[in-house]
Length: 376
Image 1 (cartoon, one colour):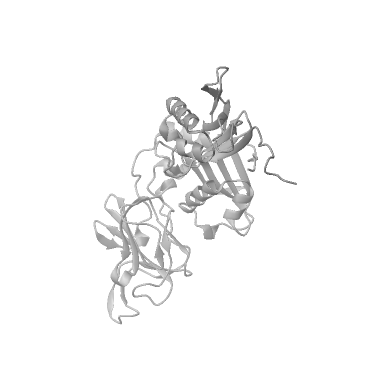
Image 2: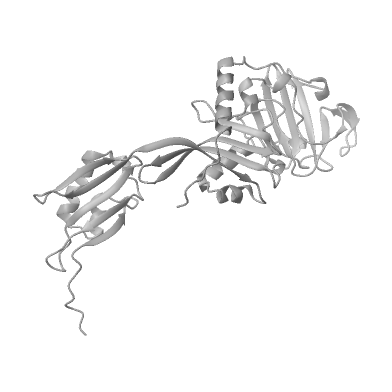
């Protein structure tokens, strides 16, 4: 049976996607739209929405009509796309046969969405399994890691996150900014971080209190481990002669996280002779701290760090006989016994209004019920 005379379908429905360095006219012509129609559509859309609204990857639903000859392009019957989450644009034929554009606003409800679950062997896979998009999970992990090292999170802990979420009347959903990130162990939070302030940064309640060293001004221990060598004159274990040991040594396992003992600014981060990989932090008021022999660093010069932020990991670089942390404290540029300094004065005053607002927002987000993110 010969098929060369089978009639064409009178209408074709298809989807076209705008490419990189593409134009609406070229995209429509590739899809089979007549050049005259393609130019009219591009002009209508250009008058309706800003050019930067039409980003590469935008999808267009097209309906092409009957053509007089297989050699001719098809006329456009209808086009629909969604330049914004709350707006659809539709182009169709009027009674007179010309193309016209209609705006169709889409009702949108915006409310935070909470996702949580029990941490398995991989925090990333656990959060993805709860429905959180990859970008959200990456932001969550980076936010948590800035205050709590991953090594401190155990299987069986609970991850908790809240995101901005938009729900459209047509059933579409869109995830926005991460608003809250937390890790809970046996009902007690290990860390709770809110997106706070105009710069989009994340903060804990201790950060907002404004203390250089947290509650009561007490300095945090820089690493988990026992002190094995104190401050003072001693025979150097490698060089063999007596000299000032200008800090204290903490025994710890290779790769253990090293924490900033108080908030401050990183003034040095890199290789520092016998100190190996070394970080120096200025805490204000003439007080500084130093951290040596690390295997790798997690900060760079000029960075602001919070109390308890991971700044590096225990190692044995420089003049070292094994994995440990060499920790120093300076006053006015001169080394002092780190054990003689137990606290620092607050760097700035606490704003009681901001503190109350932070606590209220934290309570609101952590009281949200568990949500379900529709799978795409």
